[in-house]
Length: 275
Length: 358
Image (cartoon, rainbow over all chains, first blue to last red; front, side, top):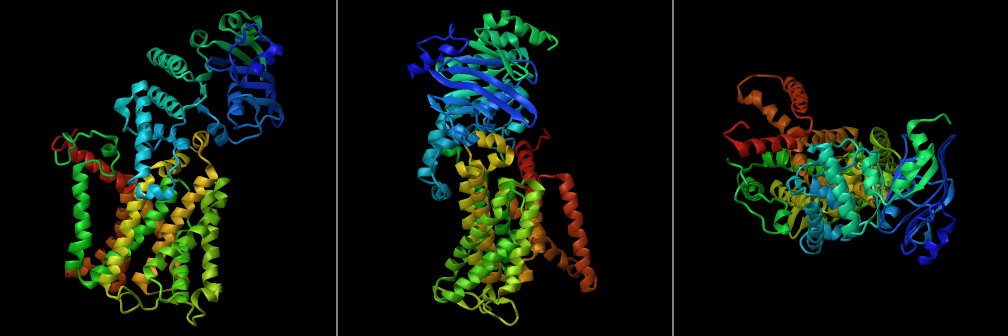
């Protein structure tokens, strides 16, 4: 694995790469277009194990498209994606899930008809294996398996402080709580890489503080690598270890928050300069 | 006040995950089962069993079958009638080929055939959703109905084109054919329906049931959680068609004694769909309530004028029944678009806080 870390000498951010850290994911020269629209043009960056990596940029910069490429929703026309040292072939989203990539959505994508508990339990789907026959009988192995996973889910419920809404259908919850349940659902997958698409969008200050705390806790206590898209610059600069900035589908900066903040291209992109 | 779970503490996840975690619900179910298995057989007359209970249970099972597909997995289907027909014809062929085999076993086995055919017609569901999928299942309905008419082998080259159920005994009791007693038929139908309902309740609360609901509620997110859409949908189609097939076989074996292709027409599909919608999508109890409403209410209504001493022509009663049932369906759907199951839940909530209005 360390060979890969050495391999990144060509990447522009190599001064900032901590050599002892392993690479979890590397994106090389990826381009994605829909017909004539180029969503992503020739982007390369990497995500190291255990870091919080932010992807920022103005609206329409290709951030969400980038996440969709990472979890297998879109297939880039060019470029390669290296996941844990293996170049990834074209894959379906459910394969990405089974390899350990979990994700939350910009506009909450919970299972509206199910309770909080069932939503988080659904994150355990890949780890449950009892077949139809045992499920029908319920007594015995299926019930045992259900209880085993329920215990894990209850840990997550405790961690996110949502005990009181365990049995509430998620459709009835407030937006902030729904985002929290969605994070819980992703955590239930025990992912290696957690993709968060605007986890703080539409939240008030208090909810943002809570969410930031959860993100840091997840990162530090469970050691989960996190890639997040966020528009709140204060949050991004405080939480993330490294930031990659996209604009019009191109990468314009990559590095630690302070460095990115000072970058003239980034300032231009956000303030708007004629291209 | 009457329905309060205060003081019922659960000390294990096992107790918390029980099918009916609240004591009052368990008592209620016990009363229903006692009524169904003991009181009704003891006190009911033949008419009540043959015209009300047996068809009600058959339709309830078919409604459970469609509910699995439409209510839990979110795939709209208009082919229920045809899948029930597949079950009926398969069971008929099986019992013709193996006359000595246990007929109840043959009825259950016939579900395997309808499951296979249901899965085949479920294939388009990977690409097509909603009303468009309903149209492809409509194709199943017409194609299978055509098969029932045009393939004489299915009805043993019978001159009338109908299937007539032969006399079959199970452990010395006649359960099918014209001589079978209503009570024997009733017990067979009740056991099969109750058994399948229990097994499905288990499936629906576990991993597989959740994966169906994930697909129903947000298929994109489900896929990102590792659910394979095609596999999951086909499984729902297969399980749903299995149950519908068994219901269809029971319909002809233990209720009608004979069936023509037109017994399994699009009309039946709609009837079952109305039961599911009116009872409540995504609710097993709702399937029973919906079936009761659509089947039992008209039967009872037909007797109301006679009991009240009003002299009406039979056709007038028939038409009045149609109008009243139709109006009631519209009324209930306006009151509660989510069906009887939701009404029942609201009722439970009201009972919990009774006598206070809040």
